[in-house]
Length: 499
Image (cartoon, rainbow, N blue to C red; front, side):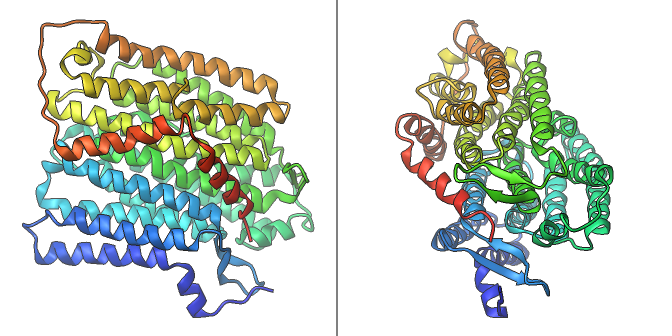
């Protein structure tokens, strides 16, 4: 029997409390020193560092927080949630560093306090999402994340495309949110509970109409699918990624997607699982054919994302469709329905974070100079900006999944999980999609290195620019050769999933 005191509940959410206090500190500092915003990034990084230490110190421990009357936890603090919290914190720290150099964010110097406060609003929402085991708490944390991101997508008010991105984002987001809430209400009507553990125990006992349950599941899946940008819930992604400030686009592509996948995995495993075999295969309640559903969505998502990217001449839109395709690959790892597939997802996410953030950072630095993200303006950059062009090439090679970069390891473990699950046909489809993705990444490399122009671009990088690029490049190259610690960390994290 699980029982927790108020003190134990508070101890379980120390990282969330640290982030909330940092948010308060940012607001107070901005109110007192409205014209002096240089310390805002430092306060943000300090808060993230404290939260990072607290998450690491709790890694390996499993705690239940805010237990219901029926002894089911509303928050499960385990290594699975800690893994995703670490990813969120690392990506947020990079976004803060991105923002220091962002020309778009600098143009709004009078609103930097609101900017960093909203980022922390997103982070707190994501932290609660990855630990939540109650549908109401999942929905509320999703709304906290979404409302902050809607504002950040249109943060540069003087930019028409920023305003357009924010408007489209909030329209699609509110629609998906409403659909998800309707699905939750149906599931509550079937089981009489919103707690995932209670739903798991009640579903086999309830006289459930399969069609009604399937409609409920798909509606909830639509809300989560919106956050992780899978087809057909992806419509917002290209326009918002292109229109939002690049730092926010990068944040949405990593942290928001990570939180969405964490919710999907926890929802799937806790509500539908009956047990785990000795080989790590999940035995699910036979109401919804989860594997067929996930495989269908993943194949459609990766295929659409890769083929749509072939015609993109804007780098941000290209990376948006690339992000959709990668969501399809990640969904395949979930579709394996085994601990091995789940480990592949965690490995993929950790590596994807570095290579995707790196690609966006290079695009941002170049856009700061030439005020463009169009492919035609990248012609000859390999000669005028060799360091940036070479770095971008490494990130794109890793995103494709070619050795000796870490992207190869990410896809290798994903394909191993598919083959071990006898999903050979699906693995072949994923491999063919990888070949397609090579084409649109090579288009950028060709423009930079094989097309010469008379235009000479000079860009003076600051020390912080070099440091950020090296910090992103190093894991992409090192994890391509020495990846054992990451594999071990992923395996430990999935063993602790649940309570």
